[in-house]
Length: 292
Ligand code: ATR
Image 1 (cartoon, rainbow, N blue to C red):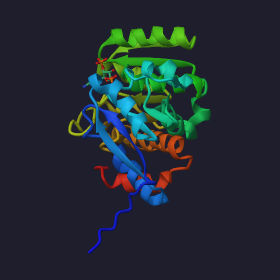
Image 2: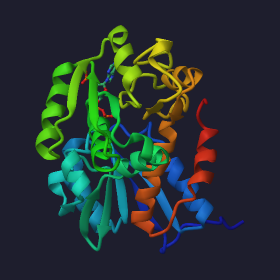
Image 3: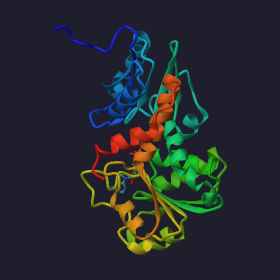
């Protein structure tokens, strides 16, 4: 019997580079999407440590790989190795998507698109508001960029385990984006109740609450949340983290990390293929892979 193989000389290759790479759900998401749209593409994971990054980029050009996602620990390291990067990638200092345009590698940050699309339903409410961002790493930089650039918030609180890092982020955005209405705080849960209460939006950008540590949360105090709030968690496994469950039980509107994950993927997909991802179908399919 002859084996049927849908891949052939016309198959276009995209993928993800990072180290370690085995936990990534991006191959699943993009291959589901290629299948749904009938595109002759395949998305593969490539385990690339920092020491191999330069060679990997040369290899990708030589093999005609159409583009790729970039994850830890390469998101920042790749920036100086690219020919060109988008304005947001440069300001945030991180690239999560590369497009190979006939041998020229261009960097983008589609996490920002994922954040914007996830928060867009609340755009009017967020204008002029006070927001609190938990965490001060790469994801936090993308969130803060989007909040300043697209949502015109009035005031940002950065809450972080290491307060000094939050303080540097504050300095960074006042220099890079001339946004000075930022305050930093240490992550001390009982002290945060009042700050959370006063915030229109609370965003968790840390890995707190991520499987298997599903009982972790920046706040376990119900009084932190109320019905006039929006609470967004970038963690997507589980889809409803402890933070989101608690916020929802107090009447707050919630935004899942899975929404952001699919939306950032949709933007990368569009950059590589020129086609729209069927985001609702992909979201529903992915949901069944995670504990809700
Ligand atoms: P990413 O690119 O995903 O944002 P990162 O740059 O490593 O990842 O940043 C991780 C952020 O989550 C940091 O703000 C980190 O706090 P520190 O600056 O104190 O390291 C925060 N973080 C990670 N694990 C945490 C935990 N268990 N409790 C509190 N904060 C945590």
